[in-house]
Amino acid sequence: MTEINLENIVCHKVPVFARFRESGRQLAGAGEIYEVKVLSHGLTLAAPGAAGEIKTRYDAAALETLPPASPNAIRGLPPTREWVNLRALGAKGDGATDETALIRRRSQSIA
Image 1 (tube, rainbow, N blue to C red):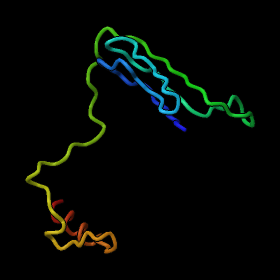
Image 2 (cartoon, rainbow, N blue to C red):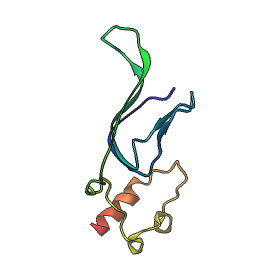
Image 3 (cartoon, rainbow, N blue to C red):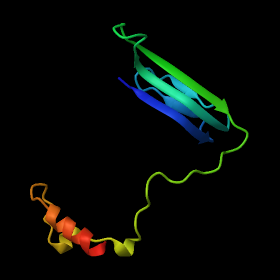
């Protein structure tokens, strides 16, 4: 069963925000530009010890314009000229050999 929780998602030109695979039910977007404050779908307990129910909470509102871009939460990859093929340095890459020392030596040499 699908369980998902999302908060503060901004969408642009996303007419269907979510489609549930079990039921085929869709949650429509709230316009061309909108923010989903909350999408919570899954087992919900009204109180400790209460029987659980599958519930959906969807709170979306249209926006006039896109908000300013926020900094990327994931650091970008280094330039490809800095990439290294660890097999060229002697790694076996067989899923069994411990390559930790080789990788640490390599990372220390570029630090």
